[in-house]
Length: 345
Length: 187
Image (cartoon, rainbow over the protein chains, first blue to last red):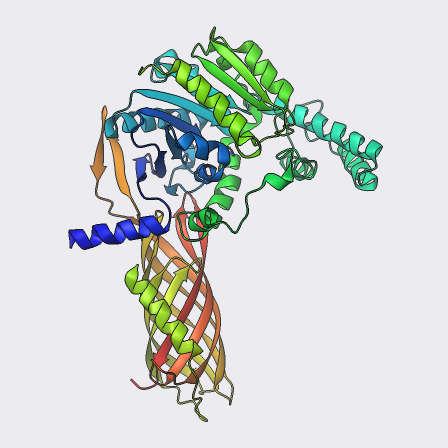
């Protein structure tokens, strides 16, 4: 019976292209958080990914070329945060806080160390994950669990990031008008910002409805992808096996995004002092054309970092998605950082 | 998983088979049914139901009954469900029918994978006893009465179904599902 079950599981895993990887859950404070460990089985270096959003799944990242390349050499850990992506359970609203996300991150690292022969752990946070990683690494006791920190297009200050992205859209709109690219539409967008500031100039309050419209403008202006043609084909087996046959749940991810964003209330997010407290070896990665969290925010974070061992790489042909847009450059920069900072040589 | 695929194959073959439509559909006052239940269409499961016509005629019927089922969403969850469902079914003289059904049930879900929980400095692997949920159901369907190669004469149906899972991180999580099944003629 056990043999038959093993054969069946192997068959299903093989069909879905997930043979040799591990999938399990961390249950804590009402949340069942999935952890997917993929990559080179002999590697004792683990790269834990903190996904964006908040509320998105991190598990689709395995489709992106940059992470595919890293999986050939290292163990990559795709973990969905509580009340996010493909997490399940019934996490109480009071547990959906940045502090709890940080606590969960420490637990995931602890669980990895118990399950595997772990010699080196690095943390890579992208977009919203940059905030979780920054809050985690700012504490020296927690930072001692890691060999290094990689900040990819990370957020550190909600209002400043938002103001920078609004300025980015306006600049792009003016540029498009000058170049004659749908000038009517971009005049309309500029006029909308005149009437809707998104951030109240007096109180500093962020209008949620206006922020949503701003994100639509961002997408339209190419803030996420510099080159739209790099999007992976929706018809590939890898995509179908994850989104169609695999663990993906459209409704869970969609509603988690809306729900967790409301519960977290990020308007007051300000992590600049935490950035200054980071002393871990740190690699800052940014897309030159990122309009969601524009490059100047990355340069500010890099300048404030307390670490003496820090470096920054700017991807010239990327916006907010370097692992997809420049997979070779991205995986090359990450590999170089991992190889020179790993402590298991 | 294997049995789910067999059932899908069975229904696909049956649906593709030449249909012998009966001139006068003999819709029994009560009937059992079996169906493929695919959450998001592709995550396989089975549903077994019993229903009874409470009001109306064979042409305009108000039906109600109980349904038991389960499905498997790989690396996400395994679900078991029981519900009371009812609604309106309109049958044309040419044996085709349309139906609108609703109901309320109980859904129990188990995550698919080992579960670890922190116990002091260590992590313990625990047996997942699952989580309870309330399950509202709404389905729109249609079908015909006939006989095919592999199935006896009876009512075949295809339903597009929405069901809910509450609570799920404090909200109602909707699921889309498809039901493809049949109810044999005589009980």
